[in-house]
Length: 476
Ligand SMILES: C[S@@+](CC[C@H](N)C(=O)[O-])C[C@H]1O[C@@H](n2cnc3c(N)ncnc32)[C@H](O)[C@@H]1O
Image 1 (spheres, helix red, strand yellow):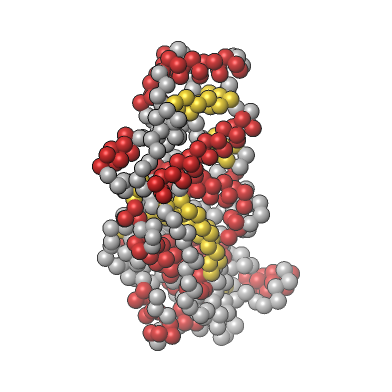
Image 2: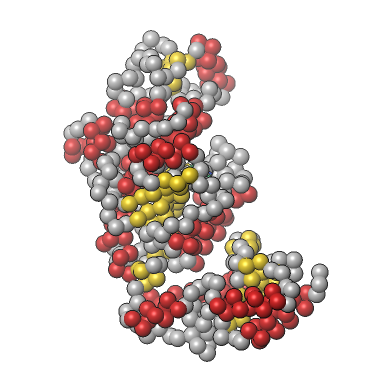
């Protein structure tokens, strides 16, 4: 990556030259909770063919006018199910952030579960989730572990990267965690820091010294309040933007709220003013051609929420390198989420080995239904430290039924031992068995009865086994 020392261009020119809309490659990425598209822009500038999903109409308009196609969808109501090689996501951070109420997984805005659903369905070669570092700290650590374990169960090698945007050419101290999952045999390395701190004055050279029409002057009353607030909160250094350092972290609250903590400039004549949208966008490393849509408040929200594109680009570059040239090169090893089989016969076997909604499952469900049994299909169960998704669930009686495929679950009668690509398949099938056991243990520990039948079991036999379990718990 280009550095300031190498180019001798101004920071603005450097940013403009890095963040261009490169011709796209074959690598398709879907950005969940895409916002204005800061994360996507970094990936787009690295050649990923990005598209986004968000429920905010203004953000979707901004994204579509600058980065690529975006859909306006409530992801909590209907997950997005496009095919993609990569899922990227910056879910709302309020559940984890120090600034929010920090309810974590109990918060209705928990996006990690939405992301996991999408990953299960799309089976991309890689996943990147961006959020505040609080997600990895005490209090939320356990929930992040559950998320990461689930990615591991889905065959991703998981890594955590806490990065400061200031190390990647962004004139702002902004620490963020990137949780990555890559299929194959390589964990993503931390992107290499490439920049010395960029001071605010280099990002907004034309405007930092004067009042401008697009910015709100801070009233004398507010200025007096700010000074009282800073004295009372023991803040020794005034929090006006320091021109010779990177800015402090921009947030929706400190950009658009009239609070004592607001981000503002102190001008040479002693007056203060808020930032313009463009200044805030520059401090986030959005190039000037990137135009935000919606009301001023909405634009500030989009800017404050965004991943700085230069930071996103550093992650995208590292990932692209692994996907294209690493030993787990996606194109070499994967086809629709499965390793490319070494023969047409194995290919046929694998395609026949659907993991969910198989015909034995459907036959058992119909038979149960004919008996008047009522149940839930594929219902996720949140257990302490683990999420389990049995094929058929009787929630009131707490009976969980799995119809195990002979291939994936290594049936002693019909589970074929892979003879080719053994290095991949053997540990994978062993992991499946270990996961089955861990699921069973967690369910039993939480008071569930676990029933496992094989796909080769005749439906009458499967029905008898399930009925026997249901009768054990009676008609509570
Ligand atoms: C932290 S921002 C994402 C910023 C984005 N990654 C970027 O770099 O510009 C979180 C986004 O989640 C969106 N969001 C929150 N709840 C949503 C939901 N239920 N469905 C879809 N989008 C949602 C918000 O509108 C917001 O744009």
